[in-house]
Image (cartoon, rainbow, N blue to C red):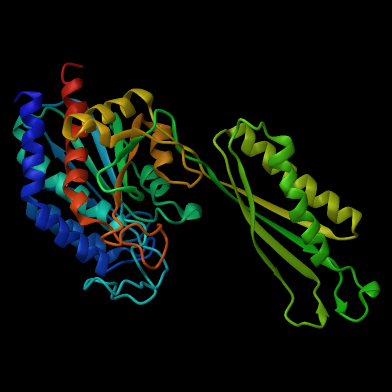
Length: 406
């Protein structure tokens, strides 16, 4: 089948299953589950994959019943293997969406980042590609990943450790993105998202009565000085041409208004794009904490956790995805986007095999789907789901076609 005909066929098939894709997205939205607890989500995915006709299915990772990987072999023989990935977990947020009738039935848990849409779109791609398998040489691996939201317990890391990338030559994924208008496709030839590190500084002094601070070693003003000094790292120790974030986001101390506590704990995050910068910042956080505490007669205990790496696209595959998007949709909908200081464990896959991660706009003010991710009012413009299905399916077929003679 000629490429243009194939793309039109993919778009047609994606539109034909639009109602099914929306129905499944709403099911997942209504039944959200937290990271590594996605047992019902996993069961439903396996049920759907089996109904479609797939037989090479594995579920359950890291000793849980969460996560699915399934393979589809093209009928035209062996070839390369391309993976498509979606995340399936939700967030600990109580939903506030009075305009919809498929709100979460799990109190305090919500799909507030679009993972329900990612799951439904990948299932849609499975349906489309299964119907086209007689035109394909090679294999497509579908990864339904648990626990994207927990940087310290990444589902990507668990699945990689258990072999999900074995034999995979390239990987692609997308994120439905409310800051972009519905249908806008964002790509980047390099960094798509930053790294995500977590640090904790425990400052220990000597508590006592609030009326007699001279008899104590108060850790609270020490913590305040520490937080203030952190601001010098980015403003004075990192090149102004480089993007870095150092944020103190949590301070805990004391239990009463008239008691100076013994301890104060400060926690925060570092976001960057270069490993050298991450190492430098981690060292400076430790030096600043220990220096200020020493000067103020306190003790500092620093714990720095190097979390998710940056999500770095392969330039060739990112441009390939952009080319496919222009072939599918009008060219003015495809734009190169800036890297985000947010984080994504898609970067763990891209550290091991080349590929690309891109954005698909789902924001529509008229439909009230323009609210930020990770908020209680978040929702998706479901009209974009056929575009997501088409893009995933077309990128996979483009990759296999380009490498059919390798």
